[in-house]
Image 1 (cartoon, one colour):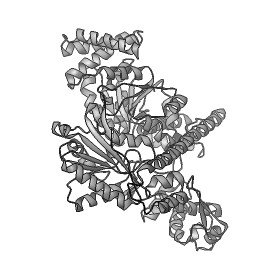
Image 2: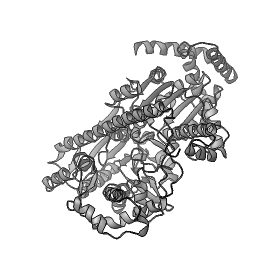
Image 3: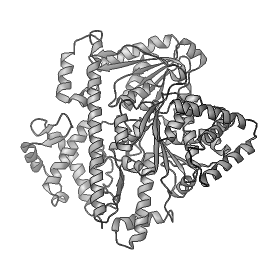
Image 4: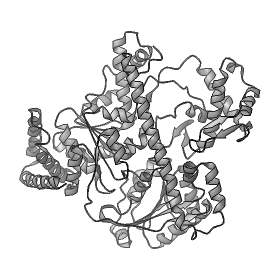
Length: 630
């Protein structure tokens, strides 16, 4: 850190010499620096000059000048670290420093963020800075057509999401394999034939440098879900669809304990001997006569699992006759994503929708494997917490804690714990009313769409004007966020108001005590809770927050299992909130159990993926392409 502080002084000295240049001369200096790198100079040697150029360009183009701590954050990322910067410390601006420096090599620099909205927003905000320095910027979102993807990846900097970069990597892989195969690999040939109609070459170029915004969310939380490109449907897809429908229609006849058992730790459901007998007794459509009975058992178990674990308007919404996943980490709709292993189809059948085909897979890659293919990887986050060891072991990155520009003034109010949800929601509404009377803006974070709308109805009955920010109100997102820090504003939100959302408080709201954040229950990851809390007290502003909990919260059942959670509810059913105030440790212990379980899941996924790839390499096969259709 002391060495980097010395570099900061050199950067500021070099910027002083740039201030006399006009915009054209500044651009010329940038192009000269690029030539210097292409001629053999190392990025380390020209870092002070590069950072000085970016700082001067930002001052001119967007009227923002990097703080000294942001320059340190930029250096931490350039040298391959995960920069931990408190929420509100300006990570979007900080990212311009290592991005510009990496792009000078002429191989492109990728910035990955949590969702399409943030990728497009951040690219648009910082584009004037890059363009003043003669650099081009591209954006790849879910609706970007293939020819424009090529153009975006050809730019000096490309902003996107892990999902889009991963799928483009896989599609390019399939395309290249199909071109070489001449009919050999069936799936690769068929899929690349479809891709060839939209583009005559792969869209991506070298995997040179990648900067991951919200690194904990993308490298840890999302790492449990592999990215999969589907192949063509098989010949028995009609029988599969019939099986999905029959299973969800039949499960009402099955009783827990008599016909199936639920594993408290994993939520796995297994049919008992009586349950299997019942499966064979229930009349089945003729199309299932050739379906193996073991497949039918498994589908009934899956239908029961979906019935117990997937809730409409919490885990998904129905839009235009389709099931759309709600991302648990961001609260946004996960466009284009589907649950695997038939879960998505079971939900479609349950909701009476058209059951889409379960197409198998043509190619797959994990988030870990994808990003480890880059020559250089770094990131930034505000909530890495205790995940430094995992990041170091899997990705080889060190965690660097960057000091804040101003001392934090965020204050925590004591936790409040309630016996039931009804008591908790009433207390939340009472606190909103009380804080609202003072004129302070209030942000209430909820875990799901249905809970945000339940609270909205409660506040409406109390006569409190408020805005609701969830996946149903995307069109008003920018307006709601821009006004959420004004005097007297009340905003009810899902996790959409977490990562990347900058709520600026007005000077009047600042004088009243700043934004008050109410957390209505714990999430499965403490990092998500901290993201919501981080909406207040940004950049030295005042702010407060409080955590509410109840013994009917999902965290207890997920962490301890249904049986123990049920006992806890009965034990504390008649206690007052005052007597339960010290019990919040029990909730956070449940959260830690879930985090540990997810960590083990990520380790197992990485282990199995490595083994699978080694086997395919030994057989002379592409480890990212499926060979089942060959």
